[in-house]
Structure formats: C-alpha cells, structure tokens
Image (cartoon, rainbow, N blue to C red; front, top):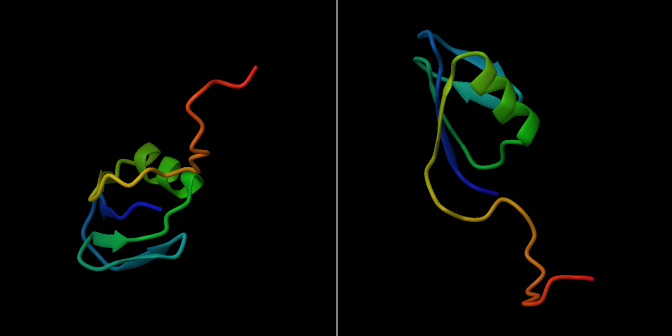
Length: 65
C-alpha cells in the first residue's frame, strides 16, 4: 500500500482508524480505502507521498475476454 500524509481540519491529538494524529498531522503506511474516504469526506487533507500502485497487478498485457 501507499504512504500517506493526512492533515486534520483541526489541531490536536486523536486516533482514527489506526491512524494516530499529533498536532493535527499523521503519516501512515497502510490506510484502507474506507478510512481514506472518511478522511476526505470530513475535511482532512490526504496526500499520497509515493506513487506505488494501491492494487494488485496481474502482469497481463492483453485484456481478458
């Protein structure tokens, strides 16, 4: 999974979905899609720090069919 920096819309310490915020900021390696949707929906800034794909790749060059 990708690495993310998440900034809360407020300062403070909290833990949401296994992501621990200090002074309104957190860096996390494994954040589920549901948690990412929650953060975005509630005004958190979510930035992907690397460009690793977030899914499986099959290595196929031709489409199935």
